[in-house]
Image (cartoon, rainbow, N blue to C red):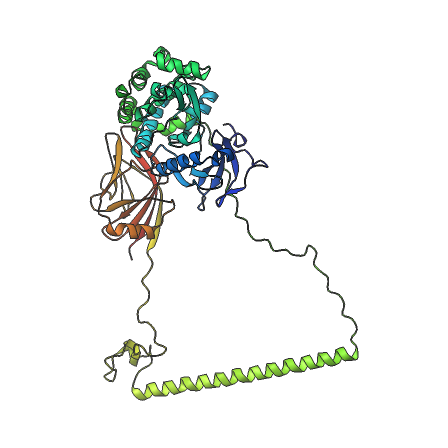
Length: 535
């Protein structure tokens, strides 16, 4: 991935230009299920649109599997996943949209630069393990975790195609039937077409980490049947791996699924080995080195607008033809008719004006006769004994014609933006000034325990906006009406996730996560915050 032309390919003649309202900008690639395109949401957020191949979309069994997996994938939201944001399983053809992750796949990065250093492999395993926690928590088994399904963003890895691989129909023949996945990264039970569980993905994580550290698959290459035989009947040679990685990868590759490490254990093990290197936020620096320079994402295409046909050359006025006697008489009649209409219209307008002025003068005489003072006069500044009990200030009686409301509409709240505020276990965020604080006295704090982190507050209420991105403070105001929680876990959150916070003063804040890291011993988040000050 050295240039934009390698990442974003121009659309070909057989590519669609739009899909369900998404304008397609470029082609990102193609796979067993179909083609992938770059597009944008209405708010300009880049997304990857995957369009199913026509021959698959005509298979009723495929559509049923695709629909089931799409519904399951909608539930997955994690820091290290590219979440599903839109899909149409019954479309013609079926399609789905996930957040676009700017960065190469692990397979591309290794092909370009060779094996990854040990710290990068540790960050990789911890990030992918946390992604598996979110995927498995939604009741999904990935079944096809491999280097090409792990993207390297600037702030960490992202797992893609979770749960969708089952619907893709990608199979590898075995002696006992058919198995879903990629042979070099399958587990023994998967290679034997047995039951796939969460432990199956852990085995694939061990193989993926071994590939990152060695630059080649642990079980070698070759025909699918040969690779699968090695996976089922032999153990990989781990002596080639760096010594620091061998114990964890060996646990991931245990033949018995019950003996494999869990994703939570993998995260904890990696955090312990990273130690002080993670305290200073070393993860992003490692990923920037591994992922290489960022490539500019093409801008959204404008939606087509109606085209108004105009003459290419302005017509020059033609000189009028000489008038004959009949034309001159007709022109005089038209001029007289226009003049008559103008005089009549002016008379009517003048009459209406006179009536209006007379009516106003009559009303003023009536007010003077009743003792009411004109609004804004010196006498009207004090109440007069003659003012009726039902009158409003200024002598206006409610319900009378021409009355003016006595109170102005409530002022709109003041919106204050605070971009890129950082929150870790040593700092906090204040809804009131100062916002960025280097101690724990602010309204919002980050609390990281075990393998997870949460937003916490002593006095403010916190909740999360689910559904489509680009929420608003109005939505926060509605959602916070019934909210009472003062702590919210970041486990289901990813870059772009939105949180609403209500301060006891009535101020409401909308936080949009930009970076989230919960892998190192000291987690941190970076967010854009907008505060609506209570009137």
